[in-house]
Image (cartoon, rainbow, N blue to C red; front, side, top):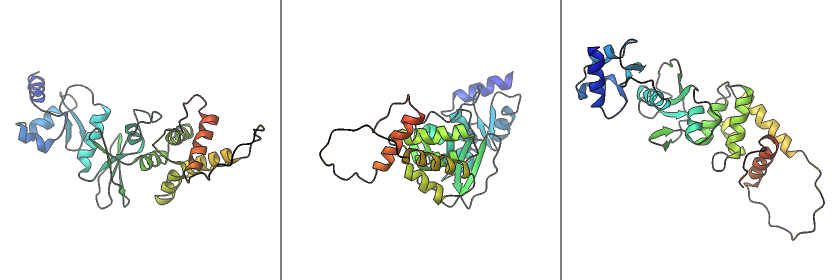
Length: 241
């Protein structure tokens, strides 16, 4: 009981929820005391090796992300499904694994619920609510190649294409080709099937003659694919072009 009271009192004095244990010395909490309070029966929670949640309530998704970034060190960023959520997509589940990109020269052991991936193609992060996040195209493709179900992978890719300002179809194809081939068989098949489906000719009703239009800009293919995908597979979604 005394430990719980002391831990709660100490937490009230701390400006954040997640800390490296080594940082807590600066706030008057010794490392031995922090590890003791973060035991299974203690008032704090160990989120990662050397990282603790200094609160008695359950860790949030943000707590888990911050713990993983503290564990990963400088240059790390969130990618995959949680990064896609931070970019505004709704299809990734909230209980998804936290996926962190780290510089290739760094080795960090993954742990339950969190995966660290070394990469030679570390992108420039986008800051979202104070969190370094991989750009949308990289985040979505990393999520798509993480061995999810066919239904979730398709939903993720189509939502990313259909949501204005997130991903272009051709950008996803290019990212898939530039990165590791591991895990790309499913997203490759989905994108190939959807491109073939929307490119299939369909009879159209006769329309009155119109004045000749100027040539479409380069991005028109993606806009057409976006509209066709939505009309076929997400009929209730709002289509913006």
